Length: 300
Image (cartoon, rainbow, N blue to C red; front, top):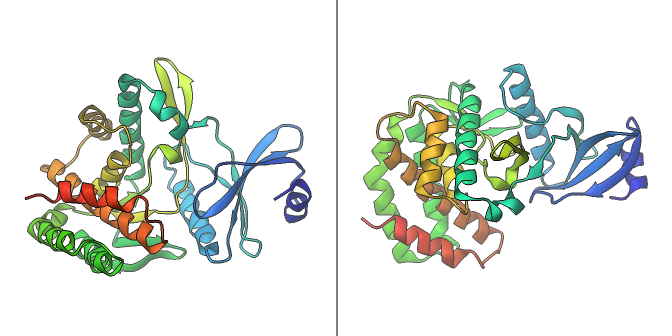
């Protein structure tokens, strides 16, 4: 989108300049200068994914109404017909390009902050489990056992259909069946970001290193087990270690007994879900590596 197109699309904003940012997979993202100093973020969705815009409006509204203390953007303008969402722009740099240069101590500090941030998000609770859509929970489930059993079964059914190794599929099926009872240990559904990794975190320099200044992209939000969220934050960290996991848990505080086995089980779920996603979009390069990881994790 160029400057003139932005001005035409946002007539109520004094658009002075526009630059494209590194966007997500679901939308084009722009840094827009308003007037002589204010900067906002413009997200433009494809026709197919315009429902994601409505979901983001719902989710940001929930955060605001429940006064959740997290550094998240606020909605300034939403136009479903133009597939455009204008959000406040948070200070900071995206963590992903910086992550490889961080020291282990800096990674540990950030992991602890992620744990603290997720704990605050998880104070928002739901009566049922499931994916959060444009009008609330889609096809809600009464328990985590019901919801995650449904999710596992769906991915396990799609895995061989999309070309996954059949022996690995059988091994994963046995692995899930042997651990299904772990899914019943969750007492209630919470607001899970379900994508809280370095690609969706902003950081600013502070005492002792980088500090989290913003969390972005609430498009994946589910009503689920807190450990589901912590597991994804851990396994999607390319530089994760036992130290960063310990810091994540320390920052979160108050996990239920037996949390580690359940968290490891959810890591299997996240990698299986990611494999199915990549395969369904025709992206084959990551699949072999994910299959190797699933083989390692599903060893009995």
